[in-house]
Length: 289
Ligand SMILES: NC(=O)c1ccc[n+]([C@@H]2O[C@H](COP(=O)([O-])OP(=O)(O)OC[C@H]3O[C@@H](n4cnc5c(N)ncnc54)[C@H](OP(=O)(O)O)[C@@H]3O)[C@@H](O)[C@H]2O)c1
Image 1 (tube, rainbow, N blue to C red):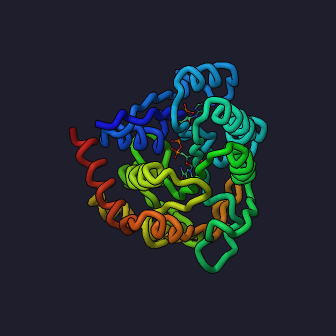
Image 2: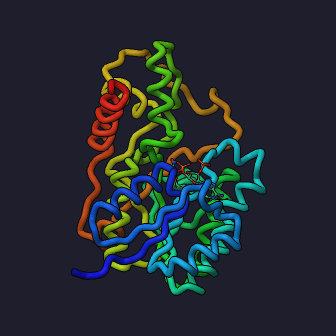
């Protein structure tokens, strides 16, 4: 049997981090060393270097990020430190230890003005501090000789702060909701994304890829579908973004085109509504236990 390939996962306690650790662990092809933030802070360059050089991984997977989009507006330096400067360190350390760097980025690097889903070669034009810090992170990750950058979108999974859980928690109280109907994107299940990322790793892919579940929707439609799937009947009012001001601006249409991934792997991620249904059913089962 082939010796499992060593992988170090950083930010292993987050939504994507948990799922990629599970996925890599399930296949038997990977030997995973997972670090949550409390075990390894990626802004601690010395400890980061120590762990990666000692671990001698073939891949370093960076699932760590400052992901609170609104908080990034008032904590721009922290956002840059985690989302960009630490990634520059990671690129240098990955090169030093002969590892490939797999870095996760976001649809929020785009301004959202496109009428069609963004492709990998569309120029980023972020409209928030978070988006800018993630764009800088991509630029930093490209300094690693072997790098794979994957842009995700509208992620949800157990263990994080996400739109679906926030909507359902509020809907469960029975209070009516107001949700924006003029932001469009690809809701993406973190477990599905982890499966797709592992496919790219198996191919030793490098470069930039978009990975999202199939189809697009608005925040309003997504909220309504999640509430319906949860068996709730809480009323939802559709509002425009202008009526719901937030510290950070959000792209109006940040849908991503994942056809480059589909061509490379021959795999098509399932439609967002199927992935969401599975997530909501599992969530109901977990809360009923
Ligand atoms: N969530 C989305 O909708 C979305 C959409 C597109 C792309 N993405 C990208 O996808 C990736 C994964 O996001 P996610 O949804 O899994 O986010 P998440 O659930 O917030 O996970 C991020 C993890 O990184 C950890 N972390 C933060 N600062 C760290 C540091 N200095 N050192 C080590 N770990 C640190 C966090 O720990 P604490 O919780 O303890 O802070 C958390 O466990 C990120 O690159 C994100 O930008 C996310």
